[in-house]
Image (cartoon, rainbow, N blue to C red; front, side):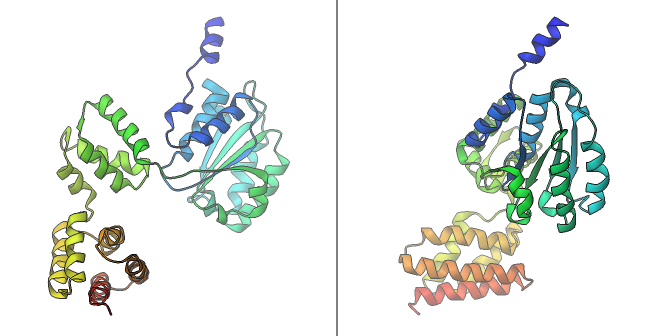
Length: 319
């Protein structure tokens, strides 16, 4: 029994395993160590550690009994008012196991809850606060009603930086005996756009082909437009050669199987590498945004991209 108590008391903390959210980890760890947390709202982009942090909090609080004291619901699958009235209330009203006087309910993708379900949830959070704490996770906190936000301590997660992604990749590299060069890490980071989950998925896909992670393999898996190819397209357009610019764009899209939206993102990044005036870069960025909006709304991608290239040609001619 004494050894079990010692193991439980001195088990290693999992908080340091989350990267890129140092301020949030510091505050949440302090709350958890006091064995008393408020209702929490984790908001931020996908793949930044929200669900992982919720699970770590539960395991830190309850140890080996965490499963008996934890209910996880994905609000995008079950988002009606009946879920709050039945599953949530039934779990919240029962007593917890162990020394911690409350259970934890984790509502993932809480911004998908209907307004009616959110209204029911606000009363449940209030009535059962003695026996239950809620952790809500969402991509957009603006979609959570104000009464729920006011009941929660809000933590806003940010996309991971390159150094954070590199730390994760190097850890996987050592564990899985891979060989990854810096250029490949740069490409994986660009492809993941700060999303840790996407980064790991890209790495797993590439590693299933070869343990030596080369930039060529990463490029094949990511299927994104290469910056140098897009720069060639834009250089032709700015120089006034619409025909060559159009042909090169078609070549990039067909050979690399790149979608219109991916090309738009690549163009938006490369605008700032063009040898043109800053005012012109601003105007072209605005044109890029208009083309992206039309593509999202259902317009033909290639027609919109040709129209965008025409704007670049006119800008290069000073019109």
